[in-house]
Image 1 (spheres, helix red, strand yellow):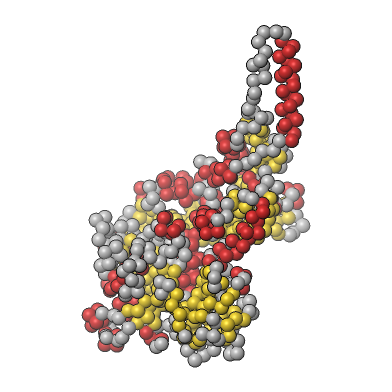
Image 2 (cartoon, helix red, strand yellow):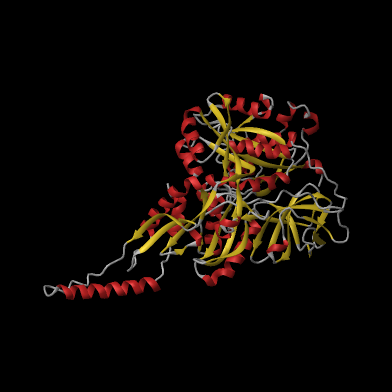
Length: 612
């Protein structure tokens, strides 16, 4: 295939600005998808994506498009492009939520251009800016598109001003469309052909393919998706995955339509898939390079940065015999979601499980839901926390992901916690409540500036641990959904942190331990005890719930015992008879308290997340 006729592009935008709908219209116009197969969010193949209306996975699909001659007569290169045959467009639809930005970075690495979609009713938002910077870093050609122009509350002129200020482009370069009705979408496809450069690469050079995604198929093993940077891959050839050093036969290769479509060969510039009977999930790494065994390339392609998990939580099977099944499920899920990390750990309260790293709270929620739906795994997830650097008095440094892994207090010199640079974009009406929220979470205001009209950007330095639990929900509720939020890492800073333990009848429940700032510890401990008092089922003995820092108890609640009225049968008679029965009951309760154990329901672990 002629390299000049290929265009690789992705669609980037803030969550809910209409990426998936725009992709639907493109597939309709290019007749890639049959009318019978067409549905809303056709590329979102998980039920979870359709239910929540969000994209979780980036999806690749190939379209064939013949540009309309009319639009090219007006372009500078009109004569070159006019009636120039059919073009192959490889589209990668990407997620918009900050928790799935790693998916976006992988898609960007496989493209030469990006369609930046901005909602005409909401304007530029935080994740728009974040994804745009990622695309500019990779030297992608940006095509700005204004979506939802048909809506009554659209403000196209004002939003165009924001885009011009953000991109520094000309006003006439911004395309207007309505992804819902399809108006303006053919012009976007024409602009993709005209503005986005063809991929560079030599079909005759040694094979170099970048693996940007993989999925597990229970019948065919692992299917890897790749972009051919140089060379040509043919069916039946022997290939090597450079990072793992493993060699396989290319049993089937092909391109990605709505379903997989086999081909005899795929050459430079194109996107495709390879099935080679790989059964072990650890043998395929996203970002790896595929090359020929007999004519290897000189060096591996620079992949993308490793995903760095931000939020850690323990994931434990409810039945301890499901431990190995949970491991297999997590390995298969990791194939499809390279930003998930996990390692084995054990807990006194919950037995054997895994310490998992996630990119954020929504990511954690989605992984838990996918484990349940796709692998039928019932799991308990502990309180999420972030990783801290603990410096000991002998000069060493330990990275702590779990409060149970904290060294002894007497050995600790200082603890450093991760800080983030948070960007909040909002209208001026909500600045007061948003500042109160961020400063209450130990944030420091770095700067505030007007973007355009009534809209402002606030920059804060905040501890990551403070935003992990309920920050995003609170921000949305106090700004009535108008504030958008994005963040990136900004190093570590020393902090006065303490380990807060929860004790039930003197026994520590390690799954409920948290690391928190000393100023918040007493209040947090008290609220945790009150919440557990509501949630723990009553037993036939008193349950003492205590919050402690080291040996010092800072809060206590008691779940009163369920009592049987042993005096019911005593009517009248001497008081010593009643006393004897009560003493007997007291001895029984004491013995029961020694041998009885307290079951902590899953609701209690989740309740800690929603303390406010």
